[in-house]
Length: 323
Image (cartoon, rainbow, N blue to C red; front, side):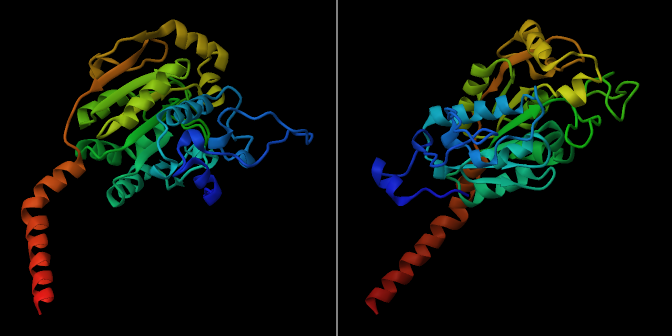
C-alpha cells in the first residue's frame, strides 16, 4: 500500500481526505513522452497502468464512478477499505491508491465482513463481478444482507464469466449464448436487485455504465447508508458476451442502454429481471432503515456483558486504589 507522508499530513493540518490525496509520480506514454494527468490520478496507482480490460469493457467506467463518489464524499482515505474477489472486475483492486484487498474466489464479502467487525469505523466497499458475488460467493452475499452488515457492495454485471473464457454465469439471461451454452442458456439468470432486497439489503439500486452520473450518485448514497447496500452496474463484455450474442460493439451497447433503459425508482425488485434483448429497468429500488448487525450486537450484549464487566472493573480499581 502507498503510504501518506508526514509532510503531506502537516500541509493540510490533519489526515488526508480523498480529495486531498496526492500522486507524486508521473505517467509516460509508450514512447517515453510525458503523459497528461487524469483528474483521478491521485487515487490511482498509475505505475500499474495501462489496465488489463478489453477495449469497450465497462469496468473502467464503474471504477471511475466509484472513485468520483469517494472524491465527492471527501472521507479520509485511512477510513476506506476496498475488497474484491476473483475475475475481471476484481482486478480493479490493483489500481487504487488506498487500502485494498484482492481476495480468493467468492470470498470478498467474508473478508469485508471481517474488516468491518474488527474496525467498525472503516467504510468497507466490495467491488466485484456477477460471477464472483452471485455464484461461488452467493451464500456469503445473501447472509451478509440478512445480517445487515454495514457494507457497500458494488457488482459489475456483464452476464458472463469474462476472464476464464466466456462461460455461462449466474446472471446470464435465458437463451443467451456463451462458450458453454452455444445453443443458448437453458437456465433463468439471477435478478440481483431482487436477491439483495429479499435477503434484507437496506439500499438497492441498478444503473448501466451509460448512466455515469447516476452511478456516482448511487454509490455515494450507498456508502453513506448504514447497513448492507447494493449497487448493480450493468456493463458490456464486448469479447465474451456481445460477440457471441450478435449484440454489436460496446458503442452499440451504450446506444442500447440509452434507448432501452427505463428509470423506475421504487419499482418492486421482483419485477426488474433482465432478458436477453428486453428493457432494462434502472433506478433506486430500495432505501429503508433497519438496525445494523453492529447496532443489534451492542444492544443485546450491553445488558449481559458490557455493564456487568465495567462494574467489575470499577470495583477492582476502587479496591486497588484503597489498598
